[in-house]
Structure formats: structure tokens, C-alpha cells
Image (cartoon, rainbow, N blue to C red):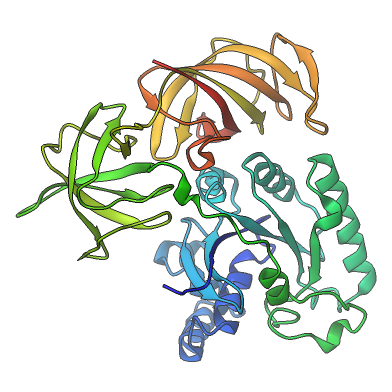
Length: 421
């Protein structure tokens, strides 16, 4: 770990606008990926007839992704700039991977939006900006990519800049403070060094813009919240739940509670990367052992917190949702699957309380009969089985969710208040 402050950075944008190539380029330029690895990827890319994909290959090192030429999982990669130590949350652009994007973006502090100069704002550009706004991403840096394709034309750059600015205003992102950078991830223009090809541009280059991001406040002052990803049985130790600490810290000797399973005990050991540690904090992936908790007592989707400030379990909760896509309309009584942290629970929308104007956030209609694609609303939700979830204002890391039905993400939202059971 670096002693610099840490940031989670989401790379978002439409498929084929060059996100993976940009990530590969950033890792390469900051010395996180050695030259010979890039050379190896280049040879492999050319062999498969995909010359030019070598930087993308750095990220997409899953065989399946190479065959398909798309990014599937959220790959975590680290790099350092002068100011920060970044973890990249590479968010897949494909529609069916929006759920990954949601669980990924909700962990990001800030984001780089990649928009291709030759294509401009595309459907997913809209969707990702909308999501980033709903899920509370702080600042956006917009990389106007593929400048090499438009011969580094200032007019093309300004055109895309204008399109994106309009989009940001629509979703109430602070467009005046957003940073736009003309880049070519493939050629390396304006990533780590100022490019002579864009002599008309005098703003920050990408690494400078990243250095200038505001520092996130660490979520250590919030109570421990650790959503469980898996539960293992390890010989000689016993039951070992595994997950990522979202807020707070965990140390041996802590008394913890798992909700909604409602069991608990004393933490005996905490391990990271197969080594015991005296304390783990936000962002750390840990395995830990709790005295008296068996494998069948807890499951994926449980949240671990302090025994004296246990995770909330919702009887119902109020949420602000944005409907991204739905073939018809959503009415009270609709029961899709909510994905929140590591939990997946069917939940019924009991009532649609207010319809919001997505541009201004003002109330447009009280108690509407239905909501449809493109609408934002305040709804009351009843989980069909116990679900641990927190108000986004108190613990944002456990306050956002995606709503899935018919194999696609139909809405995203954040929790406003929890009515505990």
C-alpha cells in the first residue's frame, strides 16, 4: 500500500469508446504495467487479428473476454500519480453488465467518462452519467478519446464537449466544474505528456486532472459494515466469512453481529492475502473467523457490523429510483429483484409516493399511478425476505441498489430511510 491518499476511480462510458485501452494506457504510463507485458499482449493481439488492442488486453486478461473482445468483470487495478494511489474500478460498458457497473460505480469516489470524438454521446454515455449522478460519484473528468481518428480536430472536440455539457446539465451534474481533456488512449496523447497534436488545447492533461481531484473523506468514522461475499470452512480455523470492508474497521477481539441472520460473536482472527493482520479498514478484502458462528448460520448478503451498532434490517424502506429501461410501466405491487451490496432479494414496490422531474429533482406529481423508462421517483419498498440495507445519507456504501428483472437492469436507486423490523 502507498502512503498517499487512496481513491477509487470508475472508468465509465459507451462500449467501444476506448475505456479498456485508456485503462491499459494509464497503467502503462504510471509504470504499473512493465513494457515487456505490453509487448507480449501486442504480439498476442496481432496473432488474433486484433492489432491495437494491446492496452485493452492488459485489463481484459480473462480468456473469454479476449475471444469476445469485451470487458465483463470489474477488474481492479492500481496505479499511483503524484498525489494519489488509485484503484481503477473498470466498469464494463455492455448493457447486460450494467449491474456490475452499478456495484462498481457505487464504490467509486470519482469517475473518468470516456467519449469517442468520432461518435459523441451514445446511449450508454447517457445511462452511465445518469447512474454516476444517482450513485453519488463526486467529480467527472471527461476524456474525449480517439482524437487521432478525427485528425486532432478542435472542432470535433468542441462539438463533443458541447454535447456532453448538455447531458451533464440534464442530470444536474455540475457541468461548469467538469474537466474535459482531448486524448488518444491508443496513441497516448495528453495522458501522461502534453501532445503536440493538440497545440490548441491548454488545459490539464489526464494525469494532471487526476491529481487535481478532491480528496475523498475516508469512511472510517462510520461503524463497521462488511457485506459477506462467501462463507468458507477452512480446516484448523473453522468458519471463515469473506468480504470487503465498506466502512469502519475490524480487529481481533471485536464483538460483531451478522444481519439479517441475527447471529454474532467475537472476532478471533482477521486475514488479508493469507496473512493475519491486527486491523483492517475500508476497501480491504478480508477473511475472518468469529467464535461460535457456524457455516450454516450466515450466508452471502448478510452484513457484519459491531454488536452494539448492528446493521439495519428493513421491514420497508423509502428509496429514490431512476427507471432506466422497462418494456411497459411499473405500478405498485411490482416485485423485481433488488441487488444491494452482496444481497439479492425480491422486493415489492408497495407504493409510488412521488414522481420527480429528473432534470431538477423537484416533485412533479404526488402518488402517480405508474412510472416508466426515464422517470425518477420516490417509492416505498418491502423486501420479501429480510434485507440489511442502510440510508444512503448515513452509509452511502450500503445505500445504493440496482433493480433487475427479465435479465436486465431496469432501475437504480438509493435508500432514503429505513423502517426497521
